[in-house]
Length: 329
Ligand code: UT7
Image (cartoon, rainbow, N blue to C red; front, side, top):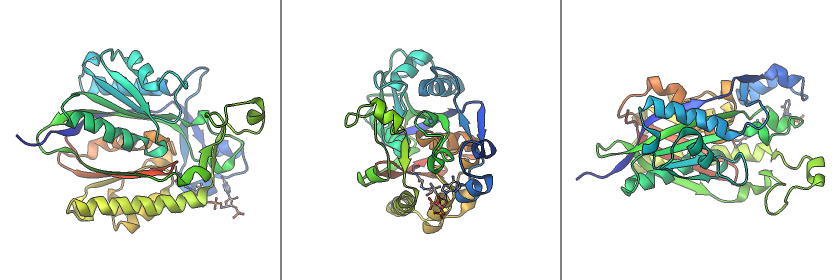
């Protein structure tokens, strides 16, 4: 019998209605539309508004659409993994709230945190449960309400991030399709350049932290940019070559959407043509764990069964990686 693989059999997403434009950001911090577009490629991003609305609101919407599209009964889902750095609460997990909100009452659920690489780490984790034969319908969700941890007085970060969620259904296949390979990495070196100081166990939130605005993301952009480019291009090249392919064999490259210049440089370094690189950063900005499933959702109509696809990400930690899959729908 041929090997049991995990294949993506459905994809869905959700972005909030409110559009935060570069023009509106000009009224909040010392920035301008031209700088944001030319340095990042971002034109607008979505923001989840409303008192008490957390990441689970977007996750529930994405998962409901996924269940509907794939004609799957909620009670048939046996695992939900939610990649996020912006859970609704420290306790309970957002995956648990998503299961409750979508009626997935037979699933065990957990959150996974790997910043912008969260979706790739969660997809690999979900894949293992399917490949082992223990779980047959696994939802992998990448969801972040970045607006909850961004300082809208800090022009170095507030222009970049947005809110959104994307989800995929993983199911077993013996057709040779689905997830073929994953190369995931982390090194801890990013803790000086991309972090939130307060709110964890090292620095539980105090009034002083809040007055110093230390509950928000801090990013030292240039070193993160350099590390993103070199590490993502490295794993993309390695995954292509260790699967005996060339760039010509790969139909789509799906990079984490952090900066259009990073994406273009990675493609160039991997000798990969931009026409086959998925990009939607212009309309959503960086949604952290949401970017890659949101790209798959946006480009779904252009994907064909058997297409070779490489997903790649880089994020806080640092964490990074590349996954090679064959599209199965
Ligand atoms: O997804 C997780 C991983 N994160 C990333 O991959 C992000 C990686 N980093 C980046 O994408 C880029 O470094 C940024 C978009 C964050 C910044 O772009 P940059 O080209 O690296 O700009 P910079 O920080 O080197 O700043 C260049 C200039 C500075 O002015 P001076 O010193 O040259 O006079 C900044 O003060 O641009 C200034 N600047 C701005 N000007 C207008 C920085 N932010 C802004 C702004 N608007 N929002």
